[in-house]
Image (cartoon, rainbow, N blue to C red; front, side):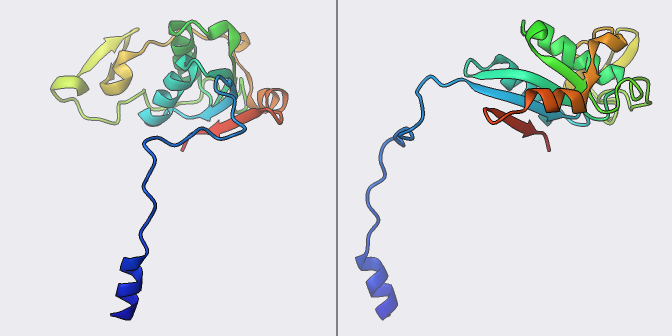
Length: 165
């Protein structure tokens, strides 16, 4: 009971309405980011959409694993749709060796069902669910670089390397 009484006597200070900014943070700072992702599930694609469209993020490069033409085409389509394609480098693991590597079609992991998971034809292939909302641009070997080269050239002490999980 003595412990409970002493705990009750110490109260926490009132919480501020909003956390003040960090004293060294510039209010309009732009963060340079290199994003490493995969397309096995939607979380990394949603992160790419956020990074490519956020006014305080400067997306310098995107790397993808394993790096098939379909994955690179999806990334290029998103970057084009957001108007940043020419400003963002795209790299893939072991490019172009992995370009034609078999990869399950985007979001074919879900069964054909009604509603938002319904399959539909996009660019001559059946796609559905989340990935049915996106396109894929045709990709040549010149449209992508080796991820190792991109990472070595774009990552420095002023750049955040963000990886999907």
